Length: 609
Image 1 (spheres, helix red, strand yellow):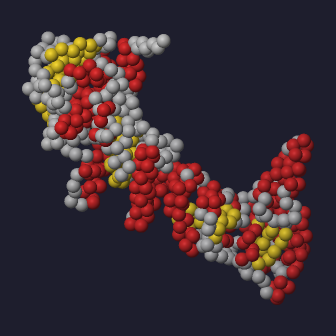
Image 2: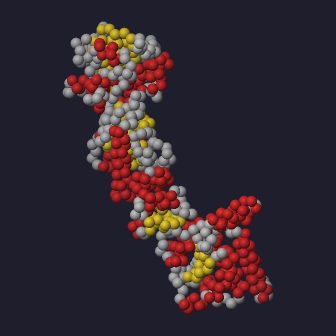
Image 3: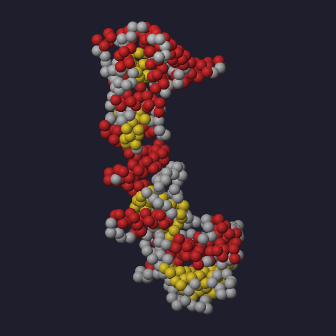
């Protein structure tokens, strides 16, 4: 035996009116939506029908609760349609023609009128159908789920509908002239049918002008100024720029505004969206691609589907395609900036740089779009990666600030362009290059590679520095450091310390091993054993430097050794390398030796003069 579901209508009304909608003020949107859908339906019968929506606030002289009257000259309802559509939850007067004319109507669910019960306990609908016998009917619905239908004692002169709402005491704030004006203009400001509001004996037209992206302008500059003024009015923000939006899928049009501040790229922007010229939501999140975090937009869609609450778009293939096309509009804007207005593009990237880099790491398409426009610090100054690759086929970089400081002056003097990858995300972006752009050559650079580019010594010069080489090799052998002598610029740099690839790691481990207990030292010893033993760091002496040239002529082996040790320590410090215990002892011994030598000179000349 089959049974019917038992529905507690009061509970359903409470659920829909208090939980489906985000605010009681949406009753205004639902009534405007019903009115405009009725006008559109009448236009199918009478193509020349223009249509108008009227809203009137009727305030009681005795101080009683006010009444709000909505009137439209749309298609109206017959008595049978009143029973069918206003008394059946989920039934819509548009449903019969929905599949054939889905784009004609905003409402599709047959539950919008119930939102009125958030602000009143009783609704009175007076209607005359353009398809009926010319009679006027009344439908009176109550919050408890009961309703009554009867012929009206006050027949309408022409087809249309009137909806009367008597304010409930706890919702009286929605029945003031200021609030009614604000809600009607807020939700219906873009509607193509005139909305006339009557309050206090005066009538005003709430939507006299079309949206700014549909107007004609004398110049591009005038259009841009008008759009930015609109964005300032809507969002109370001074935007950097504006981007016209258009997508055939979903019939979307509007404008995106470039934010004047840099949000976190995971903080998705909330956009103002209209559906068939009716405000749908001010916090829509699923309209633009995730990477479009740097804009807020206002758009109107004719062909997207709303959710049941009509406060967001339904996720389907049409919305996905519209989102893709809107993303193309934003990409094209960036491409056009790169070609025609690089200064504005650089300003935008400087403003949103960290967020742009973060998203580029997560989104390969966005990476391809922006990576060549991103600026990087190099040994030859700031430049975009695109500019870098035009001149240098291999992208060379260092990953730490210390490494960059160590090589910057010397590399620049040799004409080498090395990127400083120490800034947030820069190294990760450069390492991602060959994965996304396979034709790119990327190389991690180190100071140990620089001597390969230095000028070699002549045979005569090799003979002249033989003593210096020998003393230096003996002095630095305890530190596992090799010695070379070359000529390089700038001449002010006497030496260059070059680590092997894991040299910085080894130095940190060695220092930690010296400063910890025996148990942890054994663990660190294992880590050292796993690193490469066969490669050693190198100290390269610059024979163009006057001090080094003088050292090559020193005959006192002790003095020469002390000088080499001090130059070794200086090279470590200039390379921002931490000194281990032996190197600290070397520094102390060298300083004391230099002081003693100076004192000996003073004593030999008679002391202080």
